Amino acid sequence: MFELHGPAPRRGGPLVVVAVRDEAQAFAHRLPTLVTGVGKVRAATATTWAVLTHAPGLVLNVGTAGALRVGEVASGVVHEIGTVRQHDLNSRAIAALVGEDPAPPLRLADTDVVLVTGDRFIASPEERDRLAEHAHLVDMEGYAVAAAAHRLGAPVRLAKTVSDDAGHGAAASWLDALHAASHLLADWLDAVVDEGAARLG
Image: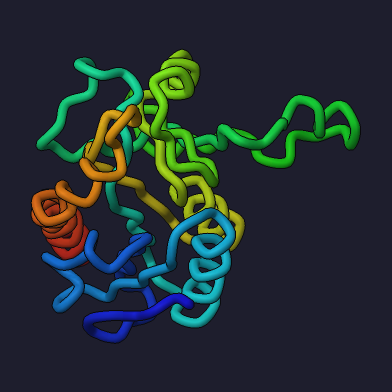
């Protein structure tokens, strides 16, 4: 079940979207924050409800992600996502059957960082290396949030910070990283919200 935290979302204002509450521990008390729950279905349904109900002017999906290219994607910083796609949907085969890609890649920002989303927690070096051929980071909600917002006409930005290396021990690393990750994301959100307020003012 999804939850709203912090100030009530306002029409035309920012709405922060995270998967789990601990990712928002540094900012949920002061920014309108939707906690969707883990996975693409929960993320998509919660985001759809929030956009239709509150009509935010900007959806900001932030959170943690696994690093697919170990040593190439820096920890301790926030990466804004340029392109997001799904990794666990056989788009090519479905497109051959129905004539269109059911989940095309979404271009979100002018960065080179590629995020792939799927309903699996990546914790094996073999699967990590396979995904690393096409992406830098992996999560379980980003594409779903972006697709829901995009379909409903809401501007959306994605930003992730590295929590683990998507290999053996990834689950323990993810849990340990949440506190620091939340503070990094809070700083990024503050800059984005301030930038938006300056533009409007």
